[in-house]
Length: 342
Length: 177
Image 1 (cartoon, rainbow over the protein chains, first blue to last red):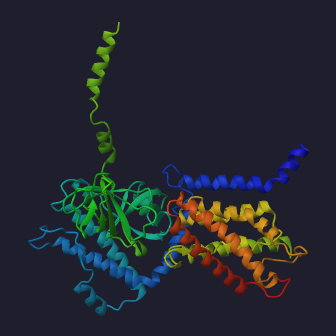
Image 2: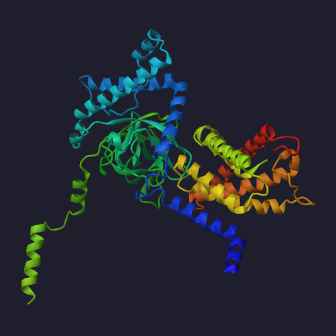
Image 3: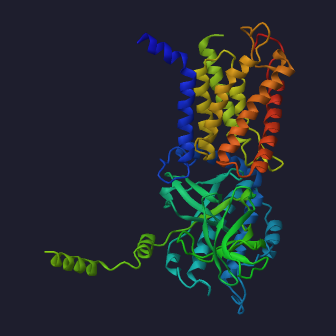
């Protein structure tokens, strides 16, 4: 016994080292799986409060910029509410200039104090969520299905923590299950697709952003509807992503818009992702290598919206069981087989 | 200095390093050349008293890394690299033992131990930590050049920040710290 204790004391460093390394590597390797307890991430209550406080402080230094962003967003949405007669004859996700006449006039008429600005920002944010819900009630011609989900409201949220330069990047939002946010919901912003909710606590949510090596977004090229998949491999910076599985015989044009296809029921169809920046076809590959410039600038992401999911279980089970016989037929067949046996 | 005061002081240091790192210096705000960032919180582990027991060092390294992991959603990545650093620190200290051994009042301090000693100590540990961190994060050896670039820039950045911390906050005279 004394020998055992002496042995343990002698090698306490090595043993503790191995133990702690195994524990940390276990946490690291299971980090991106969904079964993880929601506690050990930035969406837990204590860390969430801390990060939210930090955001409160840093926000004061950029209230002006934030309000400009929200107002540009608002102006764009209002423009969609009152379309001219020739609307929808061209791609409606062409980059729209952020400058509006209203904005300039506004700023000079109301040189606002920070308090007023905060209140203004809150008001604008609520307005935005309402407008977005209204807009999705009147789907454009490209949105053939998916109009059912329009009755569910978007949840406006504030990004309180953000990483850009890791291999797997996450955001933390200040909304949680108390606001109706569930894991696997899509997250979008005015400029395009942001990511997918991975874990939620009561008041905070952790989102795997598009800049995550395991997140893939079902996409299509808006001009001709070619479907593909957007991914973010290690080695690309935070303003670019790759568009995979585009057959090499398909003609590509630089500057084409890439939007979500709505195939994986996380994002509604037609949400902007980015524009094609460059592409190459190599003789020994079936697919073109396409580089996208992402629509969202992740380095200055502030306000986002969590998308309500359509009834997903029904669609998924339908897709999984396609080709199988319906239950009554199966039962009848089983009976017949039983009758044959003896 | 009594034990309670020592423990209290170290806890305060722990909170200060984690707090400053998570709230100010994290990798989305202060980045050098768009590649690397500084691992400010390593200062806590690097500047612990020389005679800290190994088990305590490992546990502190784990706690420190895990606190940063929770804030950054990296699972256990920072913790794994920090535990490695805590494990190697006594070895490096032994390697760099002065001719007549460490004095009782010796601390990791650039003024007391000299520039040469301090720079070797700092660069050895920071290099091992950053190599482990970035290659573990990648999970493969696929993009060696980009990753080595990040490692190099981060080593430079972290070392300079650690030096600044030493020059600003560590006593020049012996026996106070």
